[in-house]
Length: 294
Image (cartoon, rainbow, N blue to C red; front, side, top):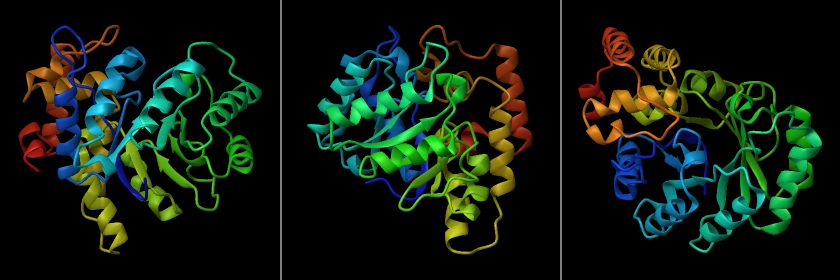
């Protein structure tokens, strides 16, 4: 069961033929947990989920079902199709996964409140036991949740709509509902969110800032003076200057060439941009070697 904490939107590691390297993807998530994460979400936008086949997703789900860290592994779906969402969730629930990070269908412009409500409503009616963390990310889905809309969903489906990942950042400062988990989508907003009553964060960049983010979280929980939050924010804001997926894969590929594999139309950073990223991180005292040894 998901609870308050620091989570990563996990990266997907690919083989040279651009199929999903299931073992390496699981190992990457496991290392993040060992280095401070409370959990990892597979198949969010950071994991290139919209570009990965359903069969590959099912293979990974079957593999993590018996993993020792299963209780810290969570799933997105990354599907636009209502029926493919239902199919994948139904499959995952056979392995006792219950909680899913789900964004409204992307691609078509002009998503409406009515249409988005209908999407979640049909999903829940098809799978009454599903637990959903709404993924609010207008940049990808073309739709931005309002406080009114989330409140309506929770009112209608109080046992199913359990939280929100807010990557549009228009909700985490103002939306407060009983027994509702709120996760800003950036660790740069982790401390501020915690101070406002949020539950932590679910972030792309915690794939590499896991130790820093956990320190900030623990210091808040223990009411200890913050010593790492400024660095955490600076590192996140540095990655934000680039395409996050490209930047993370480029950064991690310095130590592990498997991360050079990425699904089109995504590409790695150019050599010049990678050098720029590394130089900026070095100036912050955040290097690949130090981070991966943390």
